[in-house]
Image (cartoon, rainbow, N blue to C red; front, side):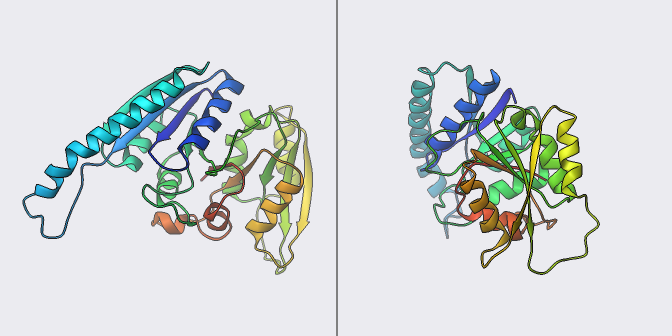
Length: 271
């Protein structure tokens, strides 16, 4: 994962995801592309002639430039190659365009202007339309030890397989890999792949995984997985983005949605 696309926005999670991107770049000898995108689509009730937009644009430009200078000043002190791209437009669209030529997109857990505990529509958009894995970093994350233990959530689905394949470069550096499945209270008839096939796939890449089956208690599947990863002191989790709705907020449904509502550790997702 040498080409890392980092979303730049003035929010409470910027420092955490920047540090995660730096740690990732150092681990792989990689390059960070910082992408800051500011939308020009500003609407106000009754603003038929765009006067509110015209008045707001200079302030938006000024704030955006101030953020750029701050980020560039911080990165100039780091030992990692980087570049800075500033564009106008919706962040989701610009990130999607650039993701095609990057190995991973690093995002925060919330949408722009939204600091509440809810899944990000932007994360859903990118997972739905991009073929590049997305790394979601909690806002309070200090650093990520990419050589530490890794936790892979497995249910044998196509999404889980895609996420597993995307994570191979990371898992190859992990001190230990747990391939974990949850024994749900209500067994469902499944026609997916058993965990041993995931382990066999990793073994062909020289990665040995420990198979773990976790009983589900009173918690949700997502909470069960996160707790299991925490008990094992894992640095990050790998998860398939389950769902198939055309609406991004429903793409991250069920287990994925719950895991992203208030992530406790970095989560690498693929769909």
